[in-house]
Image 1 (cartoon, rainbow, N blue to C red):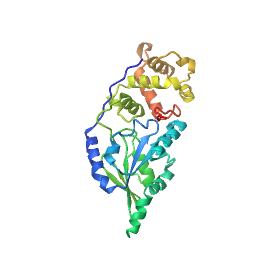
Image 2 (tube, rainbow, N blue to C red):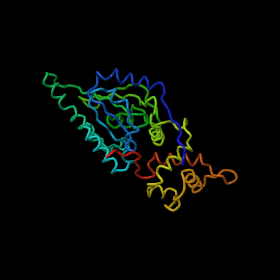
Image 3 (tube, helix red, strand yellow):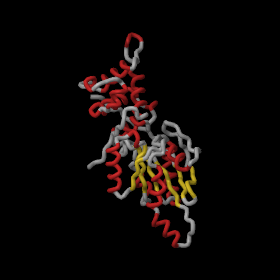
Image 4 (spheres, rainbow, N blue to C red):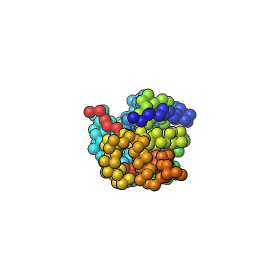
Length: 289
């Protein structure tokens, strides 16, 4: 049995972000939360409902191209049952984003008509984009606004200040820096965020992270995972996460002096390849039925 590592990460600017969200709410008509389709629970900020109060919300299940498709369908249904519209998208490729603006208009249809009834001929509707670090907000904004002002990097914490974008003549969008929460009550949440790259690797024990990841997926290993490392299921049977990490290191020729396996290098490889979607469609969290 592998050990858990205690994960906490709450940079000071995130406290400021929460204040910015609260201060901007009076300007906003709808909140769009971008979450990771592989970890919808862990990548959704539990403080958000309280922060946005009674504002309508749209959920974007990003990185759906890396998640199990049946699981994503279940998540869409889960949100719909709560009265929340959810869309599976991939912000890098643009998949599913053609439904974004029509969905926003649908959510705000009554408000739009009410404003027109008051004599406001061309009311402008405003959207706030929220999400944890590295969930894909910048890629989303670049796609939807058809601009490249939002900096895109595959690491958490790139966006630093609120920015407004014009989507169309009647839609404006406010971006906010990614915000995590002060304390993970469930360490599984912190670990899942770390698996997907939402928490910086340089504050983590990357070997322990990879060992725990391998422990998690070995029971439902994908053909793509086996193919990447030229393994079959009998190679995995009976091995714990650390033994599996050593096997991967050996298969990839990651040896150091004396023939010892470079498990740190193997760990970085495992996590990088998972985050790149090279292990197939893997969802780590499913909705309660």
